[in-house]
Image (tube, rainbow, N blue to C red; front, side, top):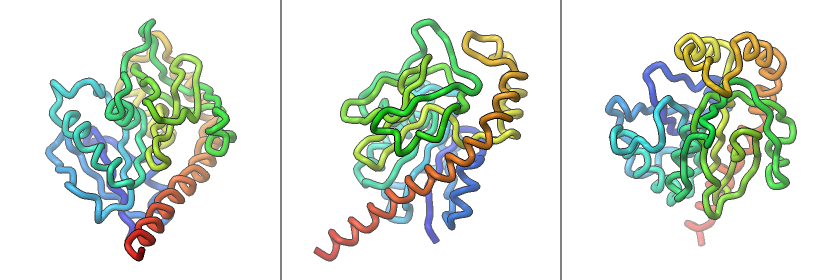
Length: 243
């Protein structure tokens, strides 16, 4: 059985479409919740990859949230192991901060809640050419880390996706989103929809009908590309051991 270590940040968090697709490919998800006492392994010998999902906290909360400090201290272990890493929203911001980049709110205090367009860079065309609009729920963004490759850009928050050393990927948006997840987030944090940069409920639902299926199709393409990096790393390790 192939195992992927998954970090979530709330007891009610779900892996959504990401988890569904990985499970359909035969991966078992080892889900950890550090904020509620779950430990993180001191090595990744039993795991093929790591996914860190989003959450309402900030990557800058290491001084008030011990689990954020724990994750920031642990992510370098993943990078050193060369095991593939996928950071989603907060998970991408944590990766960026570990790599020395700044994570902060928009200069005009604008956030992104809803479906917004992204544009692939030349380096990101193989990954994002078939993706027009993606779902966001965040008020902070990240600078591009030194040595990272920008894969997709947005209008309000420029840096939307990047990769680092071919195995670590950060996505500012939420590819795991489903209609049910979106409804739950809206109901839970309704007051945020009045803030600058937030789409109305009606507009979010309308755009989900337009772009939700496209996002699911894209994810089914992206996940195999990401898994390919896992398989490539496994082959490289085998070659090193036999050399």
